[in-house]
Length: 322
Length: 262
Image (cartoon, rainbow over all chains, first blue to last red; front, side, top):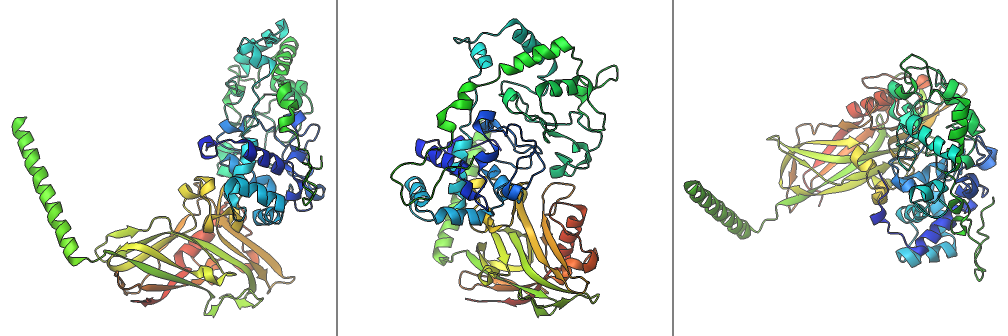
């Protein structure tokens, strides 16, 4: 379901509490991994350069850490759509043995044992122990606020100062509209669907959407990711197999593999697969994709790890270990 | 049209008078028209009570095993009168956890008075609730109970973990049943027979239903499993549906019906 903003009205104190939780490595079983360890602001909350991010004790999960942005408008989460709400998404990496490895009850026990957290939760939700809905609501106030809408492309669309695109970028934009927006639709740059983009012929290691639905027709289908800040979110694909954007464009131009569930948009009338893209067109698309970088989102201190506040002598060190 | 309006008015008048008369009658009797039914679950292995202390149990096929976790949800309790009318109790979600003796009994309230001859319940959590507002997941539905799949939103309906001790080496087994999507939905309904007994629901008395939940029936139902090849199930699968059909078919049996436990 789409995030119920009205059920969790944003306020500064809850947002700051969510931010603290997001960057608190104590929520992992050995105190080394926070949400922010694998979701870093400078990479639009993806993990730059990491195909598979290390969890506790150096364990690796099976998928690339995705960018976190504009999550409020998403119906489901994870590359396979298995998680049905932004608040619930917290539980997947928290409890996964290869990521933070902390059962929810243990996380709540840790929070309840911390006088600073007790005070901050009580100030928002009233007295009593910190419970599941409070924890999920607070974290969601931070993740729901990860809005990227101020790239040069956005400024161009809104006719704002600085919103100019060069000739190659404009050509890239037209190409994008013609060849890519069937899946990377709207200004969210994703239609939030699950598609097989021809990475492999078989999907024995990761069946994607079929892992959730158990339907053969969903084998090899993965979430269409947003392309906002895509120049910063390398590596690419659900398993991080492509290190650079030119590799991604080359895949669509001449690397698409056949399989029964391959997306129809990647089958051409002449029977060939993929999206015809000349070298010049790939260069223009690349130029356009770089206009989706939102410097404000990537650098605003508002979304960065919080500084340990002075005068909290009773508290353990709260900074994330990045 | 005018004539029709007149008839409508007359009909309305009759309905109103009937309601008024009924109301008066109700007041005169001053009988509250609802009561409660108490449920008590007892987890067993065949004829023995289930203990999580390393006690070894034997299957019909002579294999032995111990249990360290046995938990399941009971929800959507439905009571049926002899005339076939039913009462579906809303918002009943109960996590029965062998490790927490207090969790093995619950009471369903607001049941219309009458004599009930049938009972059924879902073993698990319906898809509407399990997919519903995550912030409403408190009490027995709280994901902190560890009866929840974070990676595939939804509750684990039944969890049985233990060790097969008749194999060499001993073999741990993990059976987590869940999933509400076809074709691998594990949402099943159990309908244990009251064996001809009646649950007399009155404002003045609380009938009690004692139900045994027999672990052996998880292996032995429409599908026969030997323990040595009992599947490890931690996600929806064909085997998990077979296990669910087994426990729906025979795990629950009514051992006693008390007309009044008040």
